Length: 241
Image 1: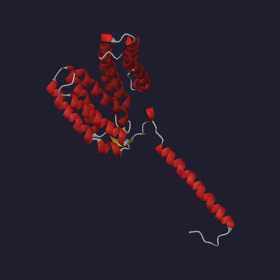
Image 2 (image 1 turned 180 degrees about the vertical axis):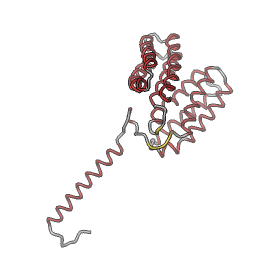
Image 3 (image 1 turned 30 degrees about the horizontal axis):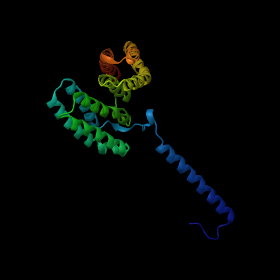
Image 4 (image 1 turned 90 degrees about the vertical axis):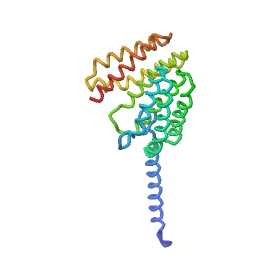
C-alpha cells in the first residue's frame, strides 16, 4: 500500500513501474493466445495423442473401408464406436486447449456418420466419415507423437479427391488436389531426411498425376487417389522406422 505521505517523485516511479508491468502482462497474454503452427493451430503440448482420439482416427477409416465394401452391418457397428470415441475424447481435447467449438464440431460430425449409417448412401457415409478425418491433423498437432499431422492430411486429401470425384463435385476435387500439393511440399523434406528419397519421388509423381487429372476428374483420378493412399502407408513406415 502506498503511503499518503509518499513524495511526488515516488508516485511517478510507482506509476511508471505499474504501466511497465501492465504492458508486459499484455504482451505475455498476447503470445499465450496467439496461434502457432500451420493453419493457426496451437503448439504441441506434453503428452501423447489420447487413445480416444486415436480411436476416432481408426474408426473413421474403418467406416470408409466398410462402406467401400457395401457392408451395412459393419458400417452401423463401427459408426456407433466412432460416435462413442468422439464423445469420449472431448475432455482430453479441452484439457489440451482445443476450443470447445472444435470439439463440438468433431462430435457432431461423428454423430452424422452414425445417423447416416443405417440407411444413407455409401458415398454419403464415406464423405461424412472423411469429414471427421479432416479435423484430425489440427487436433494431432496439439500433442506429441510419432505420426506427423501432415501425414494424416495427405490421407484425408487423397480420399477427399476420390470421393468428391465420385460425387461429381469437380470444384471440390480441385480444392483437394491443390491442398494436397501444398501439404506434400511441407512433408517432403522430412521424408527425404528419413531416407525415403525414392518414395518422395514416387509421391512427387503422384501429385503431378493428380494435378494433370484434376481437370477431368473421373475414374483415372479416383484410381490415382487410391494409389496415393497406398503411398501414404509407405510414407508412414519410413517416417516411423
